[in-house]
Length: 295
Image (cartoon, rainbow, N blue to C red):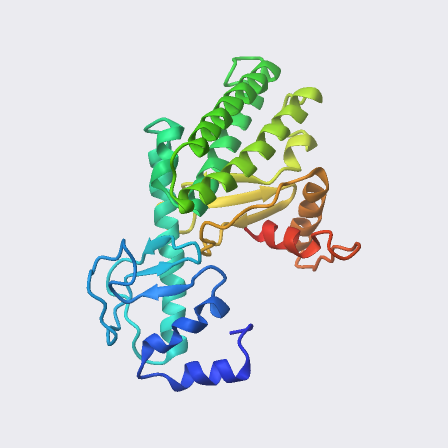
């Protein structure tokens, strides 16, 4: 409720009987939820007919019109703050489950087929997990036995091939939603390719080298506190669990070496329970960079 004005907050709290009156305020409560699907409000909704008195929540809809199902038995009943917290909890559970399914799916078919069947946020998270896994296998001498340098070169070439596949896909016929998700994925893929190029040029041959430790690294941890595993993010000494807050199919900023240094400082501060304050001239992207790190 941080971004709601007093009037908006009062309007939400006053409309306990008409739960669907909360819809116009969803974007203020959640960054990427334009609305809730109470049935029949999206092409992917399980119901075809819209019922204005429905209290059953079937899914969430992003500003880009992406749809995420919320499973069964989620109802907008009781105090509005309580059922909105239930929506938030179910959002996290649903996205964690979708991430798990995507991680399994990635290993079972070609990447250019896999990208067509998952949401934008899930694509980037899963892609980051397997990119990091491949890079560490290369640096450990597993990709090319006993030769980490050659392994990194081989993984670099594989990633250039993946990028080529993505470029061919965005040149074809796509829905606006798919195009947005693929462009965001390409932006991250290009940065990953640049990191591998840097490792090759610097002749990095172990994953304990600071050249690798300074990167934001995603891992799928089967031993996570949550059942079924969870995504873990590390950078230098910082270590976080992925929060699974819904981001929709939002665009991503191009990541420059300066962005990387800002990210390293900010994640280090977060780990130490401190704050960070990017400084510089107006209009250079301080706020957007910090928001993009949060994604």
